[in-house]
Image 1: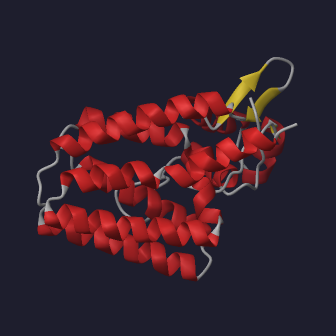
Image 2 (image 1 turned 90 degrees about the vertical axis):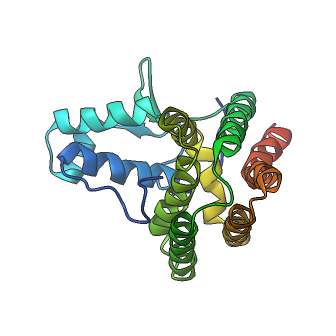
Length: 232
């Protein structure tokens, strides 16, 4: 699998991190942010003993966190290497994004439009938090707000199983779509796209929302294609 630029991404239905009640949740969230912000690079090894010392927890706690990271596709276990940060092949990314687009369009087709005032207000608040955190350079918080926006948007489809499938595939492609948050121009464009999505929801423009959500995925996908074209 080929290395891709990494940066950031998900967490809860609000623009704040999930409560991390268990030690493995704390370790999981910290490592997830490290991967998505590029602090841990593709193919880099994650050694249980070192992580246990870093977080002052037992190895069983680290193992549980790594199992969860493996489940969502951010790390993988390789023979003779142990656990390493995932490294995606461009063709796999194309396929994953195709599934994401299909699921998102299915969700949009089920949304009640025009959207309720409560949904519009919630999305507006989350996107404001996105902009404020971006201005302060707080990328972890930007990632959380970005994830919260998408989770709230597609959660409005009225089908919790479809919404869960969308989030699952969002997590799997996090190494790619998080790239935009680490690039100022792309992060600003993402914020503007969110504003436009809110406008489509308010106006009841289902077709426009579908097209906008599809275009919203393209910058990070194009970065993957560019990397593939320039690879020796």
